[in-house]
Amino acid sequence: MAIIDHDAALDRAGANVSSKWGQVWFLARRYPLGSVGAVLVIVFILTAVFADFIAPLDPTATNSRASLATPGSAYWLGADFMGRDMFSRIVHGARISLAVGLGATLLGGVLGVAIGLMSGYLGGWFDLATQRLMDIMQSLPLLVMALVMAAALGPSLENTIIAIAIPLVPTVARVVRSSTLSLREQPFVEAARAVGMGEMRIAVRHVLPNTLAPLIVLGTAQLGSAILTEASLSFLGLGIPEPYPSWGRMLSESAAEYVRTAPWLVVFPGIAISLAVFGTNLLGDALRDILDPRERT
Amino acid sequence: MSESNIPVLEVKDLKKHFPIKKGLLRRTVGQVYAVDGISFSIKSGETLGLVGESGCGKTTAGRAVLRLVEPTSGTIEVGGTDITHLSKGELRPYRRQMQIIFQDPFSSLNPRMYAGDIVGEPLLVHGVSSAKERAEQVAALFARVGLRPAQMSNYPHQFSGGQRQRIGIARALALGPKLIVGDEPVSALDVSIQAQVINLLQDLQRERQLSYLFISHNLAVVEHISHQIAVMYLGRIVEYADTRSIFTRAQHPYTEALLSAVPVPDPAIKRQKRVLQGDVPSPVKPPSGCHFHTRCPYAVARCKIESPPLREIAPGHHVSCHLR
Image (tube, rainbow over all chains, first blue to last red; front, side, top):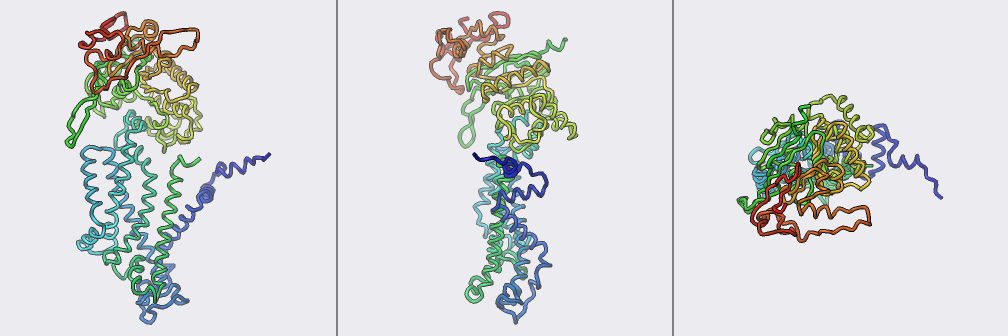
């Protein structure tokens, strides 16, 4: 007969965890993939924040003698055809990618949540009008919209963020609206109404938190795709203007010409993008489980 | 006490019709006559059992009393004040006096809030802003409904169905209401738990002079808890009397049929069963005259033409039937 080690069983279930760090450690063991994602995201963020200290060289300084230098001791990850250090550019590129990814996701997310929540909760003509507006927004191709924006406002970091955020709004709004539609009929919403709670407060306190789980997954997936979209926009000259380093542009401008002669120009920005996107997705999956109290015991 | 003469709740000719909208222009093509003119009153410390089969409008009636659905017509008086047309802001102080307990103990609690916050929320909305004060009151409520105050920081999914219903009761009690609408509050629970919850409700009633509007399809439960019983059929009250009269001297054929469906825990008793034929007609097109004539074993020609009024046939005993 097996002897049950109660203490060990309790440890495994996380019952004896009391300190903050203990909790983090417990969650890390429970969600190994999620912690890999968390580490990647943390590295990504730290790189972006401390880019000035990490990068050995100025990412925009050119050096004609180092054009297409191979990876080595002088240029760790090689240099592009203008002789700019790839490592420094990738490190600084994290800043751009993070700014675009976070900025666009947050901007699109906040607008989408506000519109979706109001649309689903209020219903009626407001819902009808906003839903048709969302249809129109979704029917516009992203690149055409970005083109118009770049032509009207000029390419810049802010305009790139806005251009990527706008197509995100209808996606988020749809997700929030559909869960709001079912949530507003729930008895706990009625209970809040019976108590005399204001409709705005009900929407924010009772409905919104229950729509978050799918949003977190959507948000982290969008963070990755925002980074990718920024790359394509930058390639077309509609995103981040030269000489600022953008992973996407680094990848796309060298892909055609140098993929055979200087593959490091393609491989390393590609790895950077993949790791950032992969990390956010893994973290997002784990966060959804952790943030949903029903998934926890 | 002069106060006890004024009923806690007085409902007069309450109607709730839901429009059926169709087509692009959302034209109203018909009405669902969910509640079609019901009147009743509840005295302080008493329970009115509202019974009927599903779809008869009893839940809508309960919701309309609390103005969770807007009544189409009729009046609702709470403690002598007409609340039917009060604005949301004006209604708020009256919300303290009337609360609701729901049928489903799962969907009636926000899964993302701590049990303590759920129970404390009415206090928060009604201006108990100090967190400490709220926590103390919530702890007292938890203890009163038979939960441990330590469970305040648990999530709803960590409780059993019966415990969750206790949380719902604690939430309803938080503001010290005079009237609680129980919308099938025990129907979703195991029989043993049902008894516990009903006993809790009765203890609370004695302790706090609570009045209940107890909506249920279960006559056995209603008999146990109610002082008065109103039987609903297709949006109307067909019989309304004190519990004893309903169970001993039921007059309406529908009540008779309902009663004969209640199981009696004695195999020696042989009863004549009255099983109703057919289904409940649609509340969109209720039958002419007496709503019940399509299924009534005694129906005569008059029943199809003329709708019987709710008449007092004995003191306190109201029946809506041409034949009584």
